[in-house]
Length: 187
Image (cartoon, rainbow, N blue to C red; front, top):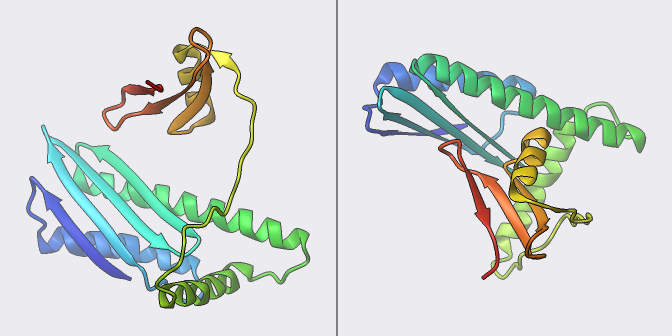
């Protein structure tokens, strides 16, 4: 993995860089072959609170985690824990899907190899179009924005689509980075 570590309002020392690379490097044990993707790390400090954002774009999977803490090293540990949970969840989901279809036990590595080959083919085709790979359908229950926020928090999502009970329009509530909520409604 190639590391791209940026500091915002903080100088990224070699000790911080080594610690980040050591901790995130441990994620390679979840893969048969180490991923060749870039690891984007953004470290920022605001009012004595350290924030770290880690994004690892891979084919068929985007690993992203963000953590705030008073101690930078603790924030790094917490963000790596989040990334490990994401990888384990994804591997479990993929293995369960292929086990039901009778695929071999080490499907995750094979899936990644196939995805890398597919990505290479897509990159070679410069005129590739955007493709929808998943389509979800669900009934929009009429509710107010407070109930939508409660539903979103209960589901653990970052946004929630609902029908506004007052106006009848389709609205979206979302969680902002500052911990508050936003509402998107048509004009």
